[in-house]
Length: 621
Image 1 (cartoon, rainbow, N blue to C red):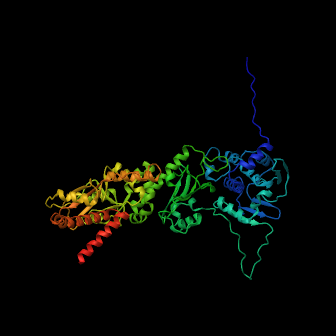
Image 2 (image 1 turned 135 degrees about the vertical axis):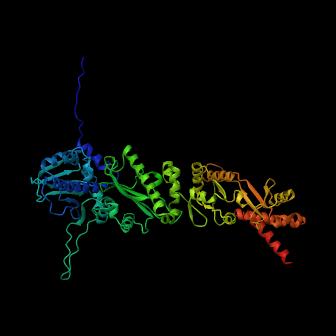
Image 3 (image 1 turned 90 degrees about the vertical axis):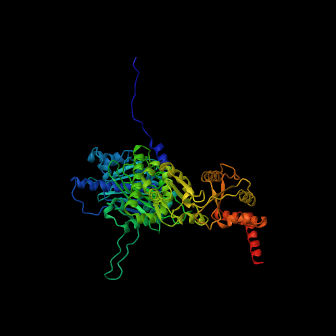
């Protein structure tokens, strides 16, 4: 027995769908103006396309969009002199929700090709027009088609009830007249409308003018003085649409300052211009960060055929690149129906990967071709490069040969360059400092022997060191961690167990590691070293405590080693002094060693100063 099957199309009652559109179609009500102006630009795009195809003759008049504010009548009107609509087209595209005239036009004149995106057709969903009802009690349309048919007038209330009759418009094009509701009067102020237009329409492909109804035209002043021409609110040929070879350095800087309201020049920029297999254009800027505490949050503006979509493009730009500023115009991005955010798919991930590659390519190009400029920029971009490398190993693999190590003398070297120079002194080890001032004595020990020291003075450097060690199979050793072989002399071996006990006593640390080494620097009596591995563990535990993942009073795991210089005359003389002098001298040597290692605690500083004053008094007696 066969079952009865019924088929049909889902219907929607306008009295039910209009309240949903009015409240929920877009996250921000102001987007309605973007949609209506976009439709006007589409009408102009279609007209120019028909002319280029020979469907109509050449267009002599200036094509533009006018936004007219009429406070007296509570209306906001968007006018264009584009393709216009016939009676049948109004019934098809306006009286039916979600039927896109743009899609029909593309199918008729572009077939299945990708030319539509290249010609800048913006609309696709057939919903943008209805966004006008988010702020309006009634919307009117005055339109006349390029085909020369009768003009059409259409009016519709917020309930969805419409009237359609012959209109009065004499010229080709369309007026969308929005009767602004009492609750949305802010959209009848010039300041608000200009703000919205500048935000969403600053780079639309046809000139957009903001006018005020009833405003008397300025009369010509003195004889011969020309009347000031109205200026469009947008730039129809934004910099990213140009070929990079056509743009000057000054244009890139001016564009950056204008779009992002930044008075400082960017460090450098990347002009993106891809057509296959991905179709998008844009410019990314590395902003200048003047302070370590300045916000690293960037701003990458996403455009869709020159129409602003959003500032937040985390789906396209990886989180570690969000400190960048820039614009991306992606006509093939899979947007949701309100063009407010992206639909995730493989295209988005490919686009993201392509942008990351271009950023890496730019860094490598600067390193290879403009090394001097690159070194001047390095300290500004170093934290970004390290963070990106830690978050994305593929990014690191692309730029690792362009990573610079800042040296304590102000110069720079790659890991390869550092190791090559150090071959005669040591192999597969990089010596570094974390504080140029407090570790100056240690640094001077190395530099006096011709050994460069790297300066890693940011918190993130500790993690980056681990990445470099793992990848390069080398060791990073802080200058206060060990006595390098090249710092040791060939003097006679000297050890004295009584001296070891003496320093353990005056330091107050019974288990203090004490050893003798013959150092080339004979003036230095002693130096304190910290075990590299135990210090790293100690730093990690402190970070854990700062993050609330461990006790604030976490124990220190750092192992101190007091290295006594057997080539120093003072160390040799200690065993000849009487007990009191021996202790005073040993205590002073230890405290000076401690002072060169780190900042003294209040108790340690008080004790050190008291002992020093006592020594001065005895010396002067």
